[in-house]
Length: 146
Image 1 (cartoon, helix red, strand yellow):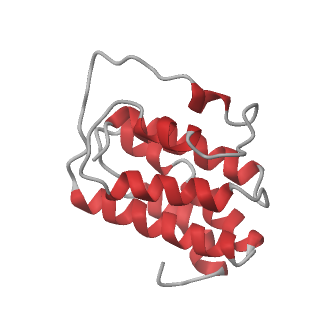
Image 2: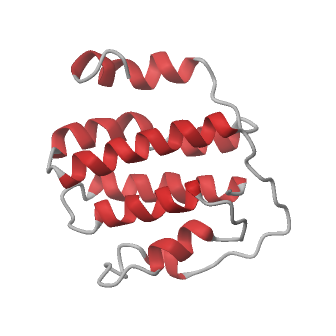
């Protein structure tokens, strides 16, 4: 399980991946994030620790992951539906990256990279406007059922 602060780290990681879509370690990074989302463990900086544990990662690009934050407020993300959604998106992204479907992966990230931050900023709720504003284009282009 993750804390609200981990959502910001996920959002930042997704932005980096979007900007370096064909980078070889991206699928590994996504896999590590999925592992954290699926874990029952609760700890500070889980996303950062997972990313920084990857051998051969570009330290300059992923600099934020090598600096753990100290938090005085901890808000645990308890909504199982949020985990299910984030894991689904991340698994689709991982598959697209592994299959070198970079245009599709970029489009998926283009609409979902901001979702973790939106969730964190909206008291762990996804506003209904997110789906029409952000996901509509991906649905029209790639998967109407997404």
